[in-house]
Amino acid sequence: MKVEIWSDVVCPFCYVGKRKFENALSQFAHRDDVQIEWKSFELTPDFVPVPGESIHASLAKKKGVPEAEGRRMNDYMTQVAKEVGLNYQFDKVIPANTFLAHQLIHFGAHHGRQDAMKERLFAAYYLEGQDINSVDTLAALAAEVGLDAGAARQALLAGTYAEEVRRDEYEAQQIQVRGVPFFVFDDKYAVSGAQPSEVFAEVLDTVWAEAHPQPTVLATGPACGPEGCD
Image 1: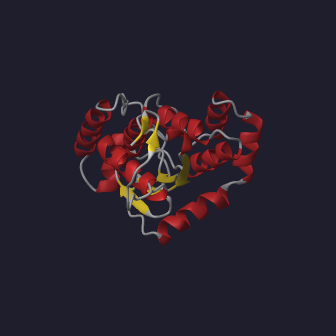
Image 2 (image 1 turned 45 degrees about the horizontal axis):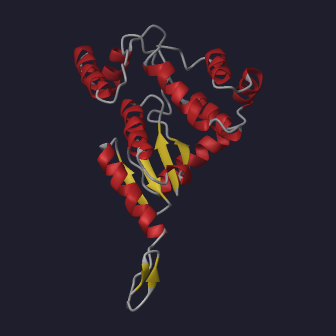
């Protein structure tokens, strides 16, 4: 089974959704046969970070509300994240443009470390307050998941994977992705948002059953089994 997940590193529900999906996947009988591919989606592709500006102020500006309201929204998200074991540190968060981070995730994919790279970026941004606008920071994070820091830096500076990011975003437009996280199962079924793990579990079972149907017994008669014959 193939599962494609469109998300953004600076989307708080995307990290929560990752945890909820992982929880469902951990209990799925065929989890070893599930191939996950992370797809790029920039919530604010034209975002230009303002040095020293807090994430509360940045969010408030984006939403057109007072900074206090931005802080209230982040406080709410902190509580949501705690429900899946994530301790968001919004006071440390450095607002970021994620185009480079998405390129690094593709770099990770080409070296067999895409999921690890995605997870490391989420943690760096939401839990540690690292600056993912910085090529130096991104290269260091790549090294932490077993990738070559020098090769990662070179790829980021050259824009080696920029086109792959744009291709993901074009695909999102084609299937009318309006928000993230957005999960697509076997190119046929989609789940939008950080749904409960029970929803993901049901979808996994449904998609697997459809792709691997059990034969329908149309007639029964005398037969032999391990315990003898009828």
